[in-house]
View 1 (tube, rainbow, N blue to C red):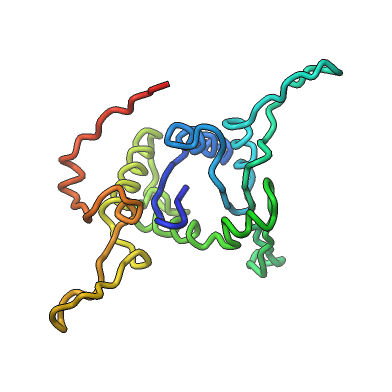
View 2: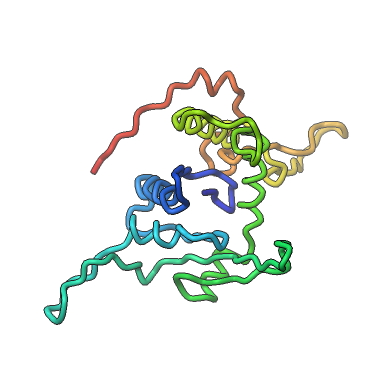
Length: 216
């Protein structure tokens, strides 16, 4: 999952199904600053995310003393989730898209999320360029799941901290000379305010992250 404004990859999930992977993503988000409800989310039309949201954030409604006691979790009334469903012809080619609101007021969801999954599609392409284990119909696959997770984690770190994105660069207005650098290149972590410089691979390898502390 990425943040649209900064392109920062904020969570990653892996599993045999999209639902299992999505549960990992929302559990990570729940521990990193979204404890009460899922953040506004936009995805493609594949299933799994709706079920994962309810699994992680859903609440069983209180029993009102009438009828059978409720046992199933239900979504919150303040959630915002929409899907951009691709429409295809008989040959499988995309001929259009449909904006489908799953949770929330349609106008509010559209204003917050927009009607495009372009950033998600682009980061998928970037992932396949940076991590050959994700290439479809290729020989560069992972024989063990732990190695696959390690490769994905390393790729996320390099993407967030080391790799500058052209769409995030800022123009430098104050130029003393004609041939000085015009742009200030930024990584997603810089755009999110997590660091003020582009990291090098050496910095990443020499940095020891502190263990997560659970304050609950």
